[in-house]
Each structure stands twice: as structure tokens, then as C-alpha cells.
Image (cartoon, rainbow, N blue to C red; front, top):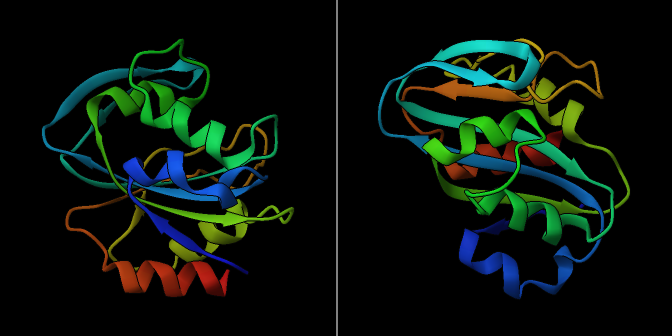
Length: 153
């Protein structure tokens, strides 16, 4: 598997993203959020810290289109992550171009990391049933550790 490590600025200039694939966003939230509506899931509090969100892009435009959408802050909200994203900064993006659906495998690996907790049951998992795709850590997980666990998954 090819695993790309990107900043948001690199997405537009990375040809390998013009295909389907799976991605992980590292988001930074710098302040407490109280009772933020997350679509039909309900209202939730979010502590300041690091959030990791696993997703996939198998539609038109592939990874590039999906990641551009996540980078944009002003848009019509459709996915759970859209409700949290305007409050966060994207720090790092890991992307695995290809036809394999890896998000549930990646979530399984992320769930093994002691510093990570699954933030909201079902977040981002409406179409997968694998528990939830959003994880929280008070301090950032080393990028090398994230890379290793994604390559394992």
C-alpha cells in the first residue's frame, strides 16, 4: 500500500489523489466546544486537543475532491465531520490511494492506541458500522506511530 503524508496545501498538487482511496485527517481544536450539533447524532462537547478522523473517497473526483471538501470551511454540511471541521485546523493528512476500503481497519488500529479514545460512537460510521471514525488525544500522536499503524491496518 502507498501511504502519502500531506499538508492541506499539498492536496491540490498531488496527482496520486485523483483516484479512490482512504484517508486520515489530523485535526487540532484549540478551545472547548459546547453542545455542537453533529447532524442527527445529537449535540456534543469537544475538548481542546487532537482529533483523528478516518474516511474514504470512492465517488467522483476521488481523494482529491473529498480532501478539498474537508479543507474548505464554508460549505453545506453533509457528513458528520462537516459540523466539527469549521472549528478545527487540519494539521496532517494521510492518504492511501486504491480500491481497498481501509477505514474500518484503520479505526481498529487507532482504537488500540492507549492515548486515543473514540470521541462519539457512530461518528462518521453511518455507512460502515465499525463503531465511529473520530478519535481524540489530549496530545498529538507521533506521525511515525500513525504511519506505522495505518500501514499495519
